[in-house]
Length: 133
Image (tube, rainbow, N blue to C red):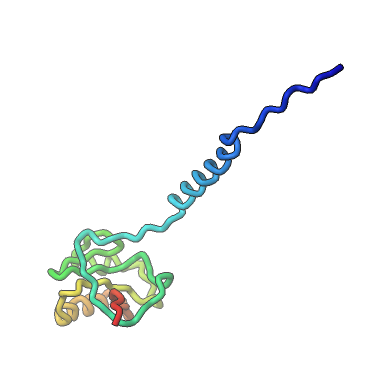
């Protein structure tokens, strides 16, 4: 008479291991696939607005303007004299997005707008922070 070997109950560890593997792979995927926004090298306080804009429309290359007039483009500090060189490859049909400090005065931006026009930029978007009414 042949006696079948006793059945061994499945361990709960065997059931959990594939789940742990999948969660780990998803974690790695989202860490690598996530898009990180570049922050300017100085602190900015965005002005408030009541209008909203879809986040998908925002570009990664933003011209940041500090309250004291410092500039940064795509996360790298630049001088006002080097603005035309930094924006040389900017497409003419796309507006340049500017994130200016909320404490900056509008008249101090006029010199920047003149320099942008000389660099061939004809449209700009001023980025603001949404404020609930």
